[in-house]
Length: 165
Image (cartoon, rainbow, N blue to C red; front, side, top):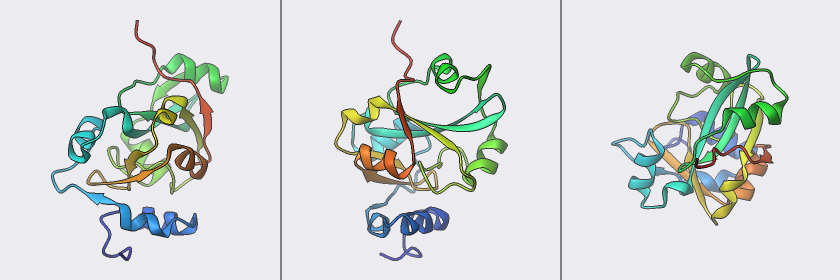
């Protein structure tokens, strides 16, 4: 499948090729009804919610940072703050997400962003052989082994998952 035939965004398809992942484009799945949330994506794919890799942008002392988290979990902002030695961590606004990544919320992939951003990947992703992540649109996802996904995202493995209280 060529990039023009793929449901992946052209920017993501090009980033995958640059990373030597051209074959990944043929594995992208499209969902015309959308898969904006982890729940929608898991239902469309037919996988566990925790097999969805959420790509979330936060601002650590105003500097964007990407956190990769399994779909069943929430990010603990205090753990992110501690991990980054930041004074304050907040969820980034939609315009910051688009400016930083080049993608809209709901379609942010783990790599192929407009700007180089620090990436934290939660260890919970390693619980699965395969996880699914956005392919640059809210309508397309791709499968990848978590270790490979984290490596291609240049992520640092961390524990930033909110624990049940």
